[in-house]
Every structure is written in structure tokens, then in C-alpha cells.
Length: 440
Image 1 (cartoon, rainbow, N blue to C red):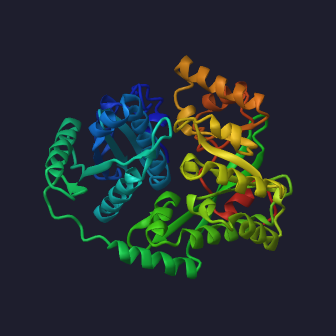
Image 2: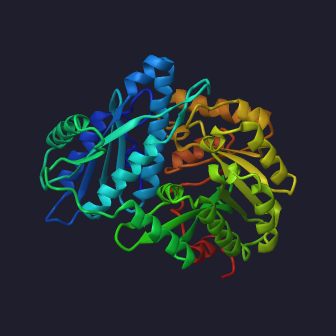
């Protein structure tokens, strides 16, 4: 399913990050408590994040850098939740300062909620570029977890989380703490899950799903973004973001990335010639000096036409040597491959990327879409970005379209293509063939 804030048209938002605010969290918890009858509703889980070292960022780099770091943290939380909580309802919020909350109504074990907390903590601890790109900062997140008790009021949930988080800050090295004072689930050691991942790759257990992309004008399927999923026997479904985090710890990102590309290209060979495939490129991919040559060889062996392929990159990919990344992407573009800058608007919107990179497409971050129905300023920002893209002869793809009103506004402002839960969640290869009306 989707974010509760999107689904309900929630307008209570944090001015800096665009996330929901503390009142929206309490509202969601109260709604779920009222809807819970006879244990038929899925259980509710909640976590509270506190960012250590945040004050030091403001002192060292200035408040603008601190604000930029908070915006990036919000973006990572949104992407993590959208990827990992696809089977339930969820709401991400900023409660003020360096505190964030994530609440979810989804059937899952305590072990899975703890693992999700640990994985989110790792994602937030990754380096964040400063606003002027003069360096990177690292934040130390601590996370309090709980499973909401039947009939428990929202204020009590928030108070329990806050008390547990305060205690966690007093325990050096402790990232995760449960608010119910019981011992944390044994879970799975990092080394175990890393070994499981290598086995899963070798046995072909990493699944590929496709997020359909639609033409704004006539809702025709024009492409799909390939995403990875792993159904771990104990944790459950693991999305692409956490999957690559595991692979990075095991130093097998290149192995996983190649595996995903091979499976996606093989599945797309039967698509009609007017349907495009998009594949994400990781930082480890572009860090390899042989990536352009190796990927071109992989593409040639697949038989899939280069002109129908788009490689998507994010700002995180570009934190290294931007000029070298640009040269690698230019080599791939010379083969006919399209290049898209993903999540545009969700980070610092560094316009230097638009000058140096051989781009064909801007993919707007879902935060650029959230709010355009109610806030004229949000719509004005969207209009300005589309105008910039048009001036640079770049196509614009809108991500995270969840309502018909969002689609209509994005279309009227000049976005050419969209993807989002309005039309479809990610689909299996066979299901995508049916949606795209392609031969099985």
C-alpha cells in the first residue's frame, strides 16, 4: 500500500523536510486504534529516530548545512519506507530538531521490525554531502522501537518511544532499543545475512519486479524501472535499498548489480520495441574503472537494444569524482543508452550535475509531487523545475504519483511520464506483461 499522508491528503507537514509533523503521527495512530476491531487489523509498529552529532554539524558547517542534512535524512526515510513497507500503511514524520518517527500498520514479526530499524539506521549513518560539497558529514542515529499495544493511545506511544530513546543516548554504542523493556529478539547476525545473500544470488533467488511507467497523455505503458526484491526465509521481503546495503557490507555490490541487470535485461527481451527498460546504477558500479566496458558487453550479450535502455543515477552515486562519473556515463551514452538523474529535488539539487552529466531525463523525487494538490508554492517549484528541464532539452518523469489530482497537475505542468501507486505497484515480470498488454 502507501504512505498514509499521501493516501489521506494529509496536509500537516514539517516546513523544512516536507514530512508529516508530530500531530499527523498522533492522528494516524488514533485512526488505526479506532479502526482496530477484534484483532482483525494488522498490528501497528512505531520507531523514533534521534540523530547524534547533529549539533556538531551545525557548529562545524553552519545551520544551512544542518538543514540540508535533515532534508537528506527525510528523503532516505521516505525511500526506505516506500521500499520496505509496500504491503501496509505507513507514515514518516519529523518531530522537531533531529528527531524523526516512522509508524506502520503491517503484519510482521518483532524480528522483522528490529531488522528494519537496524537497516534504516545504517542507511541514515551513510555519508551526507554538505551543501557546498566541501565535505561530507556523518550522523549517528539511535532508534527506539515498539509494537503498539491494543487500545494504546497515541500520546502514550510517543512518550514510551521518547523515554527509551533518551536512555539509548546514554548507552554508548547502542543503536537499537525496545520500548517495552523486554530483551530484543535474537534476530540474525550480519555475517549470517551476508552469507545468505551470496547463496541467494548463486541460486537465483533475488527476484526482479518492474515498476510500470505511463505516458501522461494517454496512460499507455511506455517503460518500467527494474527493482530487486529478496524474500528472506526469516526476515521476509527485503527491498532494493536494504539489499544493496547488505551487499556493500559483504563487498559484493558489483556481483549483485550485475545479477540484477542480467535478469532485468533477460525479462525485457520479449517486450514490444516501444517499451523502455530502466536500471539503477550504484556508486560501486561507477567507481569501477571498467564499468562502461563491462556493462556494454553485458548489454550486447543480452540482445536488448541499447536505445531502449535508461540507466538511472542518484546524487549518492555522484559523491565521488564527478568528472570521472561524467566520462563513464558519456561512454555509455555514446552506445545509445539514455541517462537519467533520479530523485531530482530530493537532495541538494546541485545544478552542476546538469552542466557536466550527459543527461536525457530528470526523474523527480516523490517529495516534489507530494503537496502539489494543496500548496501553490509546491506547484510553483514543480513548474520551475520542468521549465529548467525543457530549456536543457530533458524529459521529465514524475515519481510517486498516488492520486489522479497529482497526475493531472504534473501533466499540465509538462511532465511526460509518471510512475506510482495510482496505476500500479511493482509487478512480477509475468504481471507486467499483462499490464503492458504484451505477449507472454
